[in-house]
Image 1 (tube, rainbow, N blue to C red):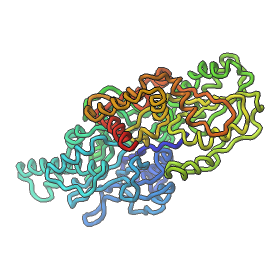
Image 2: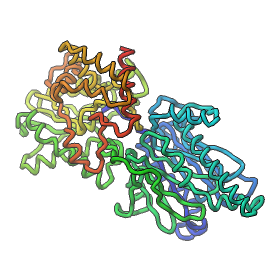
Image 3: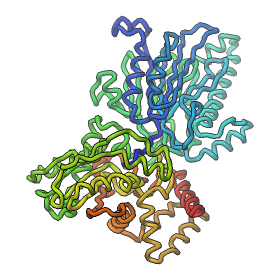
Image 4: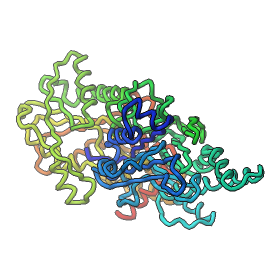
Length: 574
């Protein structure tokens, strides 16, 4: 219901033919740049706070720029960037990034890609990524221990410096090799550029990180790479032929941009890197051993484009699996029930519900009850300002159901904070005077924050958590809160102690308390909440078992530590 911010989207293109090849075949003088633009626009859903592009020209003469970068802020950042770039922004390597901040930090200095400059081409490094690192404190201390003095404290910058340090060591290794072979001056430079191993750089860099990531980069000498976290938390897809290597956060982006079929695209595997060398040779390298697969299920429910073949079917299954609890909530009275959805990401799950009812030979009644009226960014404000804006994000279709006769079943992809339900949706739907409102979520109850790139970092913002705390206090179980706090302080890395907060209650008990807490004063219509089950989620999305938002089963030690620290912070501010 409330917009969730995803960390980022990435796009990469490596041209494998001379520039005139693309002009002759496709009639495009800026083939690489034009394709990068399309790939970024097709992923606009992944980031609307800023964008950046970078390019490397391996044929640039000495004394001229060979590594270009442009960045901009705001929802129109992509358009602004591509208006600025001119004929000098051409080369063989292209990289683009779309940003959503999960840290609250803003400004052009936080927009990817990040550059590390040097007079030796091979030591120039440009990075962007879809990532959130949970152990940035440890990496910062590692850099300090090495004798570095980082200028900025942030995962993007520190990642750049750590990898840049390993890139320096790789070039120095090759420098010594070249000297041992009797090479001098520019012959040494050519030897380094021809033999540099980004696999070595990545294998000495990536083991230090805990988090979900797809890290993309390129060097001034023409090396290009993308590496995925060993748990497979964040997604990446690629395509290669004799003309290009392309990579993006979502599969349909590549399909549409290059007119390919689903089966032409390959998913980058956990812990794997795709590397394109200066000479154009493409290799797949296993940088880290794969861990237990924890591919993000929220990518399937909400973030990724629903035009993907598999995601479309998964979202329909998520909807169809909710038929039984919906039937229970409306007492089987399908004839006097109107079905609808919250625009726009819940639409496919809605089709799954209605298709399922039809397969059961029910003639379902469908109406577009809710309209997304205007795009208001409720997540950029706090308190009363957020509530006031939230009340105007949606509008309703008056007369779309029979007052006091029809139930209204309305589905959304998730219920996170509950702000929009309380301040807008429930108030508006009540004006239609339904016999009963059944609010359906195609995802399970969101009980825990995310630490791998999604804006769900505070426990107290989650309506399920607030409901559980309220139930504990109502039933005189405050000792449970105190015990949980003590364990989170004393043993923050051992296990997720916050799970104990939910343990005494059923899903239905928490549902009822959420309704009670979110129900606006004066609302007349009765309300039920129906959530997807954990079992239903895994049945619908079997290849994406990452469910820590719902179960608290964080795939990395850093996630477990941070959720315990979040509870400590909640208690200290309560």
